Length: 218
Image 1 (cartoon, rainbow, N blue to C red):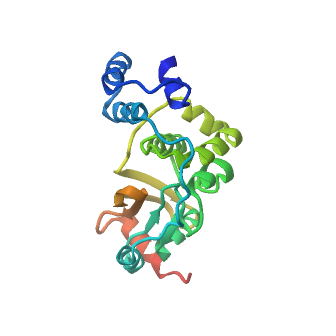
Image 2: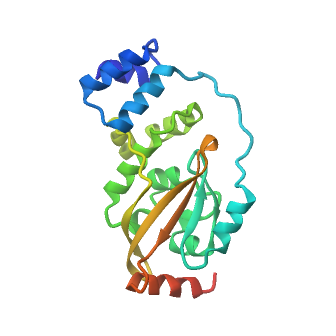
C-alpha cells in the first residue's frame, strides 16, 4: 500500500506492467483501480503542455440546448460546466456554464442541500476524478486538498470508479424531492468532455414537476 502511494505521488520509479499487475493482485484491486494502477506504471509528463480553451462540438451544443424536457449539461476535463440547458440551471445554479463543479461541491458547498445522500455523491465524484490520468488536474487537486477536509479524506481512500449511470434523489428548494435517473456519455474521449443527462420516469410525479420547472420564466 505504501508503494502504491509513492507511485501516485510520483515519488518512485515506474514499475513494469507485470509488476503493476502483481501489486494489483496483492492489494485485491477491482478492475477500475487496476486500470488506474497500470496507468500510473506507464508514467506521465511532469510538466503538461498548456491546452487551448475547451470547446464543445457544435452538434453537441445544439443537442443540449434543444432538450426542453430533460436537464442536460456538458462538463469539461476539469469538471467545468461548458454548456447547459435552461432546465439544468433551473435544477441547480451549480450547473451554470462557467461553474467548476469540484470547487462548487468542496469549497462553496452550494449544491449540498440538493442531494439527499451528500456523502455518497462526493465520494463518487472523487472516485471518478481518479479515473482520468491527466497531469493537468494536479493544480486543482492540490487546491482542493489544501482547502477541503472532505476532499482530503476521500482522496486519501484512493477509490477509483467511473460512474456512468445511476439513480439519485434531488431535493429541489421549490419542488421538493425529485427521483431521477442520470447518464454520463463521453463526448470527446481525448478531451475528457462528458454529457450529463437527468431524466424522470414517464408519467411519474417527478416528470410532471420537471415539466413545470421548464415552464417557469428563466
